[in-house]
Image (tube, rainbow, N blue to C red; front, side, top):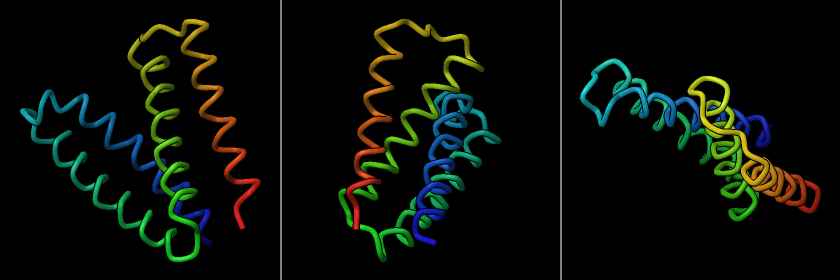
Amino acid sequence: MAWIYLVAAGALEVVWATAMKFSAGFTRPGPAVVTLVAMAASVWLLALAMRSLPLGTAYAIWTGIGAVGAFAVGIFMLGEAATAGRLVSVALIVAGMIGLRLTSA
């Protein structure tokens, strides 16, 4: 169950990062509220996952899901560049997350 909490927490990290972008520096109330609610829910789910997962593994995978997800949102929704260097860099993040998952107790 901890891994499900962790994946959900990471997905909510993508939600709040995206909403923060659309909040225009917290000047737009709707996206600002989504940001704050998603942040709180993301951290709460991370805390639940950390009950049984190691700190380093849980935190690294949480931030990794957020980073890779925000990267994907940037490319597919916001028209950001998908250069070879950026794609290789994200692949390295994913490889690190897989390595942590495979080596966690």
